[in-house]
Length: 151
Image (cartoon, rainbow, N blue to C red; front, side):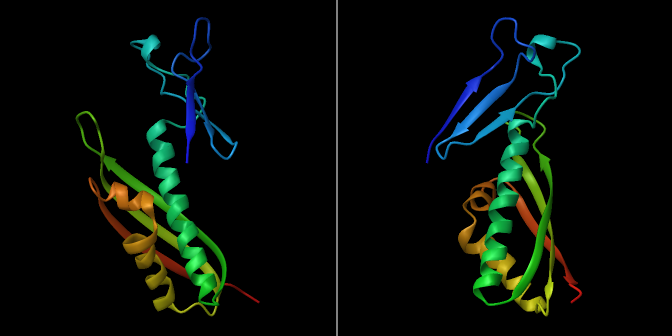
């Protein structure tokens, strides 16, 4: 796996702290800093997610992918899955994540609550490499809602 991140904030740039990431699979992702009124040269223009937001989003994508895949492999009729992540960071640099709560909303037909609970646990205990890395600095908790889909 590889990724090239390029600073887009050269001379005359509109966003002094903008970055373009190009992944090994050929996709691009913009990142930017928050506006810093006191020191504009240190801030961005809020044109794209912050780098740490992309870490959090990637973790959500990793675990949601696992949950859907595990449920589908179990031949469950899963029709929707979203996860809302709420994170706290350390107050001092390097400001790592210290707490992350993931709330899943899983929708389907006849989905057993135990199967959803097991899929979430398996993702965090075995499959999701992103949450495994973040668990080294953050306490990760989960919860879920199960919604029965109409016919």
